[in-house]
Length: 246
Image (cartoon, rainbow, N blue to C red; front, side, top):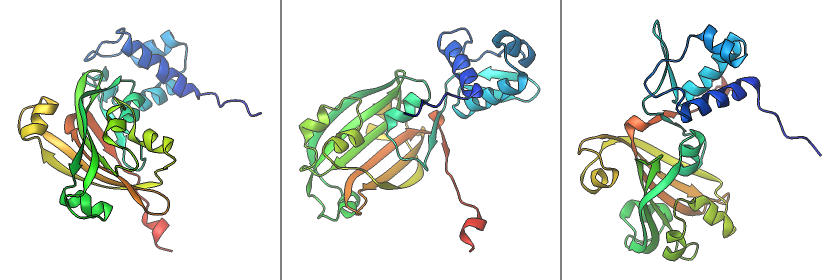
């Protein structure tokens, strides 16, 4: 039997630094010790330390400022790689923050026109809907609405999820999400969205509308997510022209 892969040195160093931030040894907004001093404390080389810091920069936990040093961010950014399809809770947990849910409720509601179009049904068709505000260590960062067919997950099953994943609930029903197609646009918080996220009207958002399908192309989930723009860093893997010119 193959032995489990051991984390690389830079990942182990990054984990140690992350723990020190979470335990309050390195406080948000403060500068880390100099690289030579920090490398000495950790018993590692400066090159390995720099590689670990790069990982924590990508997670939004640290930020290098040229000529000033490396600082613990006041509020870690949630690094959202749109080339990977995973739930909001996994995204939050990957940053070392505690995922949670507020103001959750599920119901049977008529499908809006764009959602009905995605499912290939008539507008107004009854669908199961889950409304949630997703939190990262208590901070409200995403308002989400998930629609699915009642025969797959009824409102009671959605309500029982709490902070859990709709993907996992579908998987438990034998339905595997093969791919999702998402569109993302800049918007601002208005009305109910601003109230649920507890931000000022006009706050910047990244709004994501996603359609998830099985390997056979059957649409099983449609999601609308309003992400606080200042809480997320978005990345997308883009192929170079060399991969598409042949």
